Length: 366
Ligand SMILES: NC(=O)c1ccc[n+]([C@@H]2O[C@H](COP(=O)([O-])OP(=O)(O)OC[C@H]3O[C@@H](n4cnc5c(N)ncnc54)[C@H](O)[C@@H]3O)[C@@H](O)[C@H]2O)c1
Image 1 (cartoon, rainbow, N blue to C red):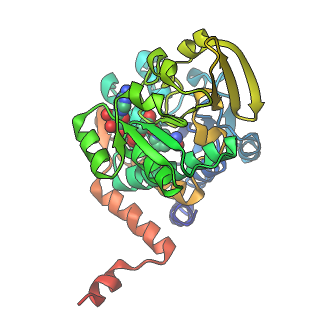
Image 2: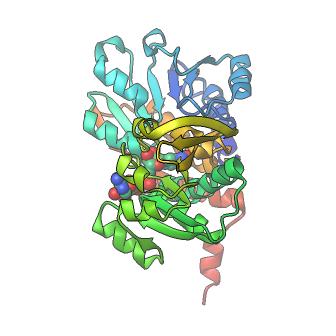
């Protein structure tokens, strides 16, 4: 992760986060481990918990603990005992708790939020402390959500099922940044991609990108694989489940484990059998069966390794620079966005790491 390495070298000498107690709530993977090491090198005292139930890598938690990081399992975490000054969040899980009990966090200076779903939640919460959204930049949305998650979602599905994708009907619910990446990669592997959208603007974009666009139930009726990528709950409910052909594979790569309504699935299930790691076959009362991947949680993080390190290098560079900014600058209460200058800075660092020199190329253009 050369971009993070570069930032770490810049800050290591003068420890700009010294005196800050940083609480992080982001999937505990090897890539997050590199971000945590940067925060430690910047002088921060760090405590960390995973982003959800399926993504923690125990060996990474153990390695960070050996470096003095207090690591909590998701269930055991109580932010009260941490008393953080900075919070780095994923899905607004900690920010939500802080907003609900603000008095319990008297020392909090500011927080960051790194996901689409979490950013929306932060805006709804209208917090009375500064929150810097580290999501709405080109370097995050395009590199991570579209290109990174597109690949890692397909990787997770293939690792879980071992199936051939070519010729299969692959239905994507949602055509935002993540859905677009998933649709693109599925098509690249030869699947026949069908997209469902909630808005006409998105539907037009999907259709003119070359994909079939259909209503949810019609799309579900054709699905060999159905993948949700919206960030909203109850995207697949009883109506879609009743339409699925037997043998359909059902999975989710949006942040929320509630995109597939699991209680609707449970109501229709006579028996559930784990047929492979990450795959539960639901035998339905009406004689059909469907295979649910990763219990409806994030398939790319559960069945695969999440986004590649090269992608998270960029995502976490945004996060690291945001944390460093919060360490030196007091922002006003409320929601803040990253600046286009930081977006450009991260993109420049990534290009350098890849050995791409745009100035020279532009100069060489006739
Ligand atoms: N798996 C991962 O590693 C990963 C990585 C990045 C983001 N995410 C998550 O993926 C989710 C989507 O992120 P995004 O950046 O694409 O968001 P986005 O806002 O760009 O796109 C979401 C799209 O879903 C559509 N939508 C909402 N409800 C729908 C429904 N019922 N049916 C069909 N479409 C519907 C919206 O209209 C929107 O176009 C978020 O929860 C985000 O946090 C996951």
